[in-house]
Length: 570
DNA sequence: GCCGTTTTCGGCCCGACTGTTTTCAGTCG
Image (cartoon, rainbow, N blue to C red; front, side, top):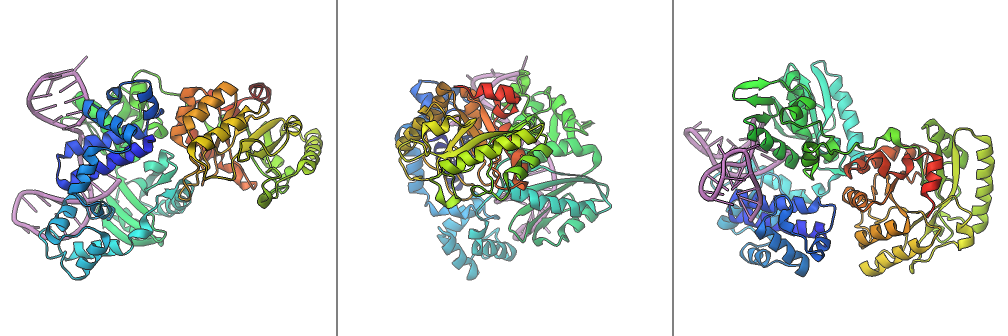
């Protein structure tokens, strides 16, 4: 059982208990424990093996520590099986319909025997739902509309796609005279790899007019709700957008509130309560007196904390770190001195060697590594030994010509099924940096896949494992890999791992990045660019690194070229 | 079910919007 699996099952149990009508705070305890497990930089399995006390983790007491241990050891939990016996599993999918929470789901089941989306559709079409007390005609219509299109709204939206939608919408809102400040907050501002919706904060003097302007936006498919300080819409793309309007003097408090995460906000507000203060989206209050909170810094200061970067606000220890003055000084885009993973027209890239080099110069980089695919990857026009050596000569010529930038000879070498590499050692030896990755046989067992990567790292010429898990966001899970074993293996061998900044990859993911930091493995943030424009994706990789608490020194390619060459020595 | 500078019981962040209610419950973020 991986941490994510344990968290998923705890959340499922929470859902079931909630529908049963269990104490709301008990339900919250399960969810909070799930979040705690999900955000850990170490695996529960590993902690148990070392006989560490799970009850020491935040939000986990004696009871949940035992349940989590049972889950980790057996893959099941009696309390969960029993709850599933009592409450049909089909009720869980009903919760995915907005408008439907635990209370209404219970009513639907108790009164009409509804236990699936299909049964709900049928009952709603027959008008049976609106006949229930506390359900009306409007609610029935909304539920039916949701039930008809539930499958379309399944996925969260990738960060880069959310960004594109946000840019256009922000520009549209800025055209309106009444808008003073506008900020995209929520998980977008925290740099999460996907967002559930866009949360946009505006300050203005006439909120009603601003709300009207917002819902009149071309891209709006339907208006979910509209009040005078908040409105929710769906865009034609299916993306939900929440707009929140406050006065200028509430900007700091509102930005903090609207950035979240919810768990982070709860923790900060609890701290405020302990000091006799109350924090809401309008400000910080002592009784009826409002203490100024025009900026986030002022909000944090009121509870005795320094400003915490949005990427850290997941209630994963950032508040404790802030209290102890141990917040990381997060890596920034300006710290990046080069990009160690990119392709050219020699394999499957769109730009030539020279075009990539000149683009990197414009970005102010000191070095880049040219990492076209190796011979085995024929679909990507991988280079054989002859073509690779020819490219090395071209690189020598370009290096002699260009100033301020150094091209490193490299290759993205395929890791074959048995962990051997796609080029012989005498070729690997000629490279300035050797990066390796898995492009085939994704279906191997966890043990064999892990062994495969470890074996590849045994080769003394290997420097960097690219997109280590192979996952594609909203696409595929990635291959089974014991990431802790790979990190330990990398550390003892002096190999580095990558944060691949392709928007569909972002691989390693944030939790793995944090694990790498704990283990002491340097990561490289690379774009894997297949065109000049994609070099700009570096920012997404930096966000991911920041979410993993990385500082400048934790990142390989913040080094100068001389330092880099040194760090590559194994 | 968790937790403790109101500490082993009695709290648990705080507010907006909607619909169905006629003062508020349910849902959401």
